[in-house]
Image (tube, rainbow, N blue to C red; front, side, top):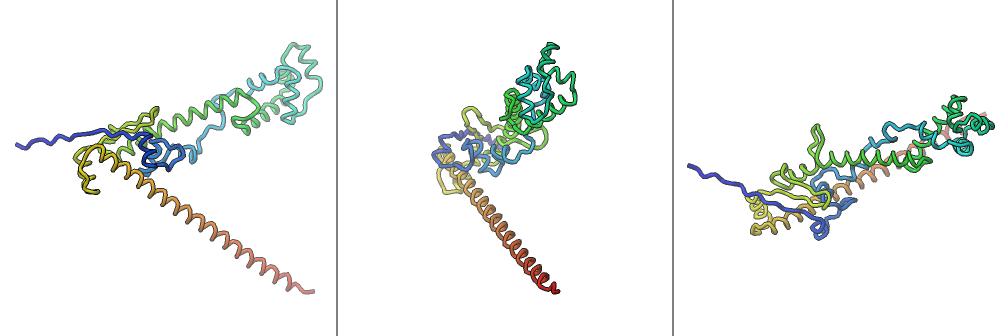
Length: 276
């Protein structure tokens, strides 16, 4: 009867100290998970912000009118807002609103709905243009919270995957460098990644690499050197692509300049041929 071979699985942790020691610095954040993702050919956390076109442009279900009412309670506030938004108002609003015992903005909304609607639409556009640095502190805060929540969700999906086909970078890094990716993990608070390795596979890898006798310490050194080497290779490839794109842009500019010079020459010849 054949004896069963039991795999021995070991843990290897990659820490910020390891990243610093091996001078693995190829991403904006410098975090362990970002450096590992970059090395494994995956998207980094910075890529979420750089290429994401779904960033919220306004807070969810925001009440713009309530915000404007808050900002136009009295006569001075209403006229200052109108001047800022370049909207013309009747000069008697303050007097009549006080007589009616209403806030200035509320009186305008009740008695001149067209002007109020114009003021509200212009105010809304101004808030959109100002993003998180506009004229309403409430709006700025709400929008920033909405954006933060959006990217927190995006970051979670980047780390752990979504409900469709994307597996998540924790799994993908584990698949690339480890031997049991579903058991690999990442501590986002301490920024420590834990790889699960099969000792038998690891021993074979390191033996083929330079004949070093296997140990967890030796394999971790091999692994970190491999991570750095892969990152350097990706950086070199990216640099080549940037240089190629730069050369292509320069070639295109030269071509356009030649085309313009030729067109200018032809135009001049046509003009000179227009004899009396």
